[in-house]
Image (cartoon, rainbow, N blue to C red; front, side, top):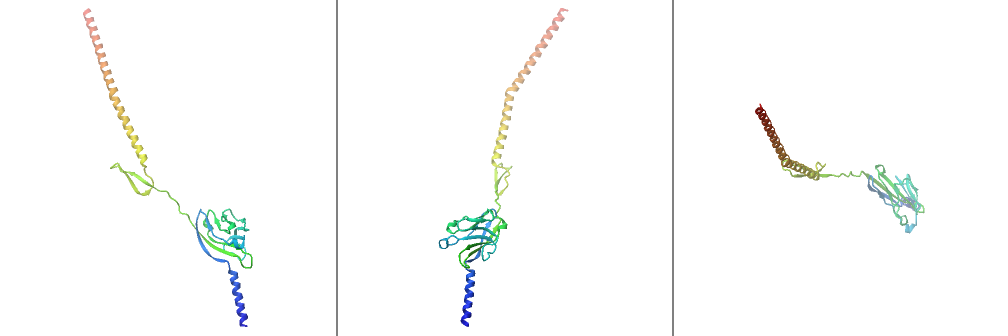
Length: 228
């Protein structure tokens, strides 16, 4: 009697072992939104040959995959819930790792890989927990350049802030001011050299003409007086 009870217990323990064989505890994988992540799953194809494999979300049942995402017959993919789910590994080498493209926060959760090995309770199960983090925002900052009015020199701020004035713009403005000053100076020089002497000549000519006119008038009046 005692021997029969012991054998029954051994049979029960053996059955429990067979029911749990091939099931691996879930491990965590971290991905970022907008990027891709790969959940690893492989089997010994040289020993078993090509096997049917499926990927699903949540806990795997005893047979098949619940909420199935993608499946293969051992040679090629036969079903796919979305183009975001890809088997990019070498199927001929037993690599059935799942790659999820363009991650979103809703992709977070548990995933299961079921490798259907022939025989009773021989299926190989792998569970993985996907954690999706928000991708950091990439900001581009530049160092600003300010102009000191008291010294006239460039002072570069060490803290990254918005650009207030670029050195190239300041150099161009200075060149434009210098060019304007040079143009005004040259214009004034030409005015003094050309226009002022011309004005003097015109003034002298008008005075000479006036003197000539006055002389003729005086001479004419004198002739009229003598004729009387």
